[in-house]
Amino acid sequence: MSRRTRGSRRVPNQPAERPEQRTQAPRPSLGEQWEGANLPARALLPLRFFFGATFLYAGVDKLVDPAFFSASNPASIVSQLAAFARVSPLAFLIKPLEPFAVPIGILIALAELAIGLGAITGLAFRMAAAGGAAVSLLFWLTASWATRPYYYGPDLPYAFGWLALAIAGTSDLWVPESVKRLGAPTEGGPPRYLETEPSPTRRAMIQVGVLGAIALVTASLAVPLRFLRRDDAGAIADASAPPTNGGATPMPGQPTPTLTPSATSTPAGATAAPFKPSGLTVASIAQVDARGAVRILVPANAPSSLPAGDPGVIVKLKDGSYAAYDALCTHEGCRVGWDAADGVLLCPCHGAAFDPNAHAAVLQGPTNTPLLELPIVVDHAAGTITLRA
Ligand code: FES
Image (cartoon, rainbow, N blue to C red; front, side):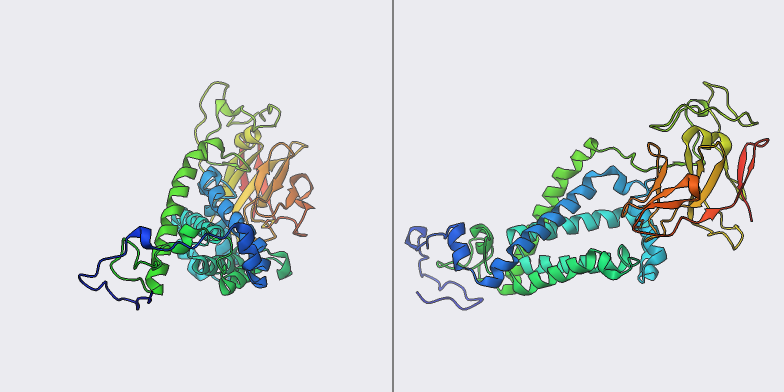
C-alpha cells in the first residue's frame, strides 16, 4: 500500500478502506519494547519516570496546599516571590510580578503537572522535557540562586537531566499505543477527526492540546483535596491582628501565657482592639505575650541601619524578655516561621533553624549565619515594642 503524501486528500469516488481491511500489527508487550529499545532509551527510562513523578507530585502538592497560596505563610508563593525579588538576578522581572503571585503560583503548578504527565505518558514528550528544563532553569535563577556552592542546589541538575531527556526522546519505549497514534496517520488514511494527514507540527499541537486538557482535569481533581490540608505550619500572626480571647489564647504547643501588667492588657473575655503600628512602634507587648511571636514589617522610615521593608519577627524569650529579628533567612532569603512547639524560628525552604533565645544562632544549616537581630525598646508602661535606631 502506497503511503499518502503529507496534506493529500482522499481521491473522490475512491472508497475508503473498511476498518476490517486494515492490518493491525500486534502490539509489543512491555518486555518486547524493552528488548527492542536502544541502550540510551533504556538508560534514560529511570530518569524519565523519576522526573515525571516528581514534577507531577510537585504540581499536585502546590494545588492541594493552602499554605502555598496564603500570603501570611512563610512558605507561600507570595513570600517566595518577595524573597526572589531580593536575591535573584531576575529581580527586575520578578518585582513587578509580585502582586500576581497567586496566579503565577497556579501557572507554575499547572506547568509542573503537564510536564510530569508528559514525561510519564510520552505525550508531547520532547516539549514537556524542554519545558522541564526551562522551569528548572527558572528555579535555579530564583530559588537556588543564593545556594553556595552551586552544586548544593537541586535545580541545575534537574535542568540538565530534562535537557538530556528532551534530546533523547522516548524512542517509543513504554509509551501507550493510544499516545503513539494520537494525531498520527493510519494505514487507512488520516485520523477520523482530520481531513488530511497531519503535519508533524500539527501532530505536536494535537498532543500538546491533549496534554494540557489532561493537566487541567488533574488539577481540577486535586484542588478539592485542599480541605485535607491545614494552613498553619510556620505561620506567625501579624502584629496588627487582634489577639483572640482578650489576648490570652496561647499559640499551639505553648503554655497559657501570663500577661504582663500594662496599659494595654485587656480584661479576659473582652475583644482587644487591633494594634496599629505607628512609626517605629511595631507591636504591642500583649500580642507578643499572647502568641509567643508576631510578624512585623520594618517600616519604610526605619533608620538606614535597619532593613527597611523586610519582614521581621518579635519573639517572647524564655526569660520573659523580647527579641526582634529580620525574618529573611540568611541562606536564600525565604521568610522564617515560628515553630511554637520547639520554640525555634524555622525556614520552610531548606530547613534552617535559628534559636531566638541565643541571638538567632544557627541550630541547623544549610546556612552558618544567624538572623539579623533588630534592636528594640520595650516600653512596659505603654505596652509597646519599638524599633531602635
Ligand atoms: Fe534555604 Fe532558608 S532559604 S534554609
